[in-house]
Amino acid sequence: MRKPIIAGNWKMNTSTSEATELVKAMKKKLVSITGVDKVLCPPFVSLSLVKDLIKGTSIKLGAQNMHYERSGAYTGEISPVMLSGLCSFVILGHSERRALFEESDQIVNKKVQAALDLQLTPIVCVGESLEQNEAGETIDVVTRQIKAAFNGVESLQGTVVAYEPIWAIGTGKAARGDQANAIHKVIRSVIAQLYDDSVAQDMRIQYGGSVTAANIAEFIGQPEIDGALVGGASLKAPEFISIVEQTSKIKKTG
Ligand code: 13P
Image (cartoon, rainbow, N blue to C red; front, top):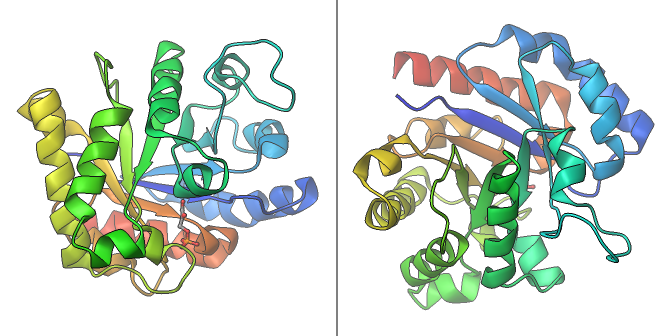
């Protein structure tokens, strides 16, 4: 049985005081929900304060990105060494990084390796654009991204994959549960090819893209979907709590 995992990607939102308020508004309820990994991914500048606020609880912390080098003349960048004492997860290869900051599959691959070398758990994002989707290229794109991200990676060490179709991100147009489930199945089969069946069966695959409290059940009810990477809805405490609560209930009974 794979433990479901819900992660909130706050993206470039919240000042440090807003981050504090948001954690305070969610903490008590989130802690009371069992059977789900709960991960908060605030901006870099709030990692330390969120770490203190969730100390000793079951809530986990993740970063939204990192550089692949451990140190050096990379003005403005954050290294895996810096993160390793601070958080346990790191989102890598988000489509916004790929599209807006020109992150290639090769760069994502270097980051995955660098994170694993320091025992950070990557949440590796893959997903097709609307154009690629309409051209029937979804499976090819996602397969290429997965193979590239894990190229030369010997052991996945709990790595999570997030399938985030770009056309569903921030648009309010989520994929259908069965559509996402089918792609998750493809991802799992690619992992089985690269590693083996047991590694593939153990890997948690999240869906991301316009997940809300109103549609989470549709995703979580699918056998291949092990959680969600939540953007906008993770900035609203009651909604994020509801997403985690529903996930716990559905996966426990389902
Ligand atoms: P939204 O939930 O806002 O669509 O964002 C999804 C996402 O990109 C999470 O990483």
